[in-house]
Image (cartoon, rainbow, N blue to C red; front, side, top):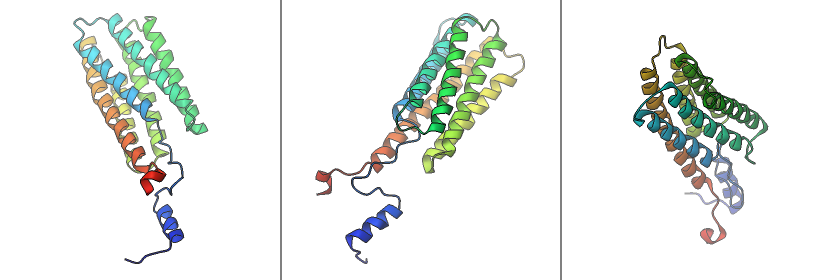
Length: 210
């Protein structure tokens, strides 16, 4: 193997995408804590919907409202992160505000029918899916694949809620709980993938370089 001078070796590593010592790692498209929080609250929401002993429209609406409020708050907190670009701030901020509005509407018992509540849930999934896809196309590699896959899954779930004819309360409960568990678990897995990727690009400390 040919040995290059140190300055050529540094250029070679930079061209390959490895950050030189002392350089800050490129921030993740979405913060680890935000993705993990969204995944955990979605999983807990899915479990609560499925295992609650009795299901009424008011109860399901309250659970959906709490889920949307927490998810919207996490989106807004992520929008104000110092590593976000202006475009991502606007996108995450708009989605966060809309989720909060949907959550308040559910808690104020605006959803007086199954169709209305299903429409709110469907729109929430659609908005989340659009945000994931748009942010995903700003990323690269594995992160892009994860985000686009999650976004497409959210879009499909949202469309199912909006176009399902004659959706009953029992069917809506099953669909809501199962899809929340699946997508929430995928978000948790993606969060740890983000953390693993961030650790891989973290520059070595002077002690580690010796």
